[in-house]
Image (tube, rainbow, N blue to C red; front, side, top):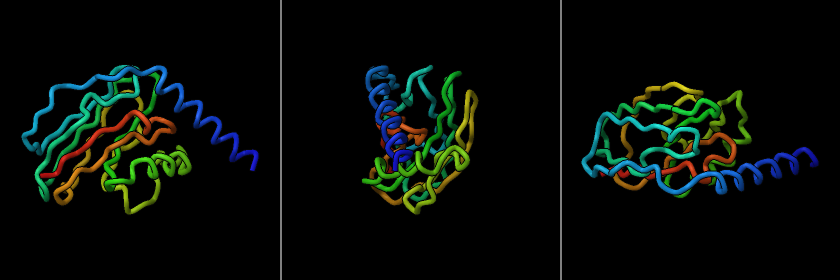
Length: 152
């Protein structure tokens, strides 16, 4: 019980610091044209993606290149079921680094590896029409490191 409370306390501190140490922005202009080849990056040493919105065509194969520009933090990119971003963020922390902070859940639709500075490329089929959240599940990051994939 004490260990669980310590974990929750640490998670709350990380979440507080993420709000205090990041600023809004870091967004590139949004192209509402569906893309098949997407590159999304982190913004320097912040807990932000450079794009808050992505557009794809439902059912198409998507190639996503995730670039982590941070030299001090690890990040990943997960596409999740609508309405499940916070739940997956919490479950990711519980999954631990050995599982790259990615929970075993049918609500995880696509995921990159947890990486330090560098990049990871994945391919996935765009989900049915709708708005799908994407997040980083490194503990505490999901609270601010998120965006929306619009499947048209």
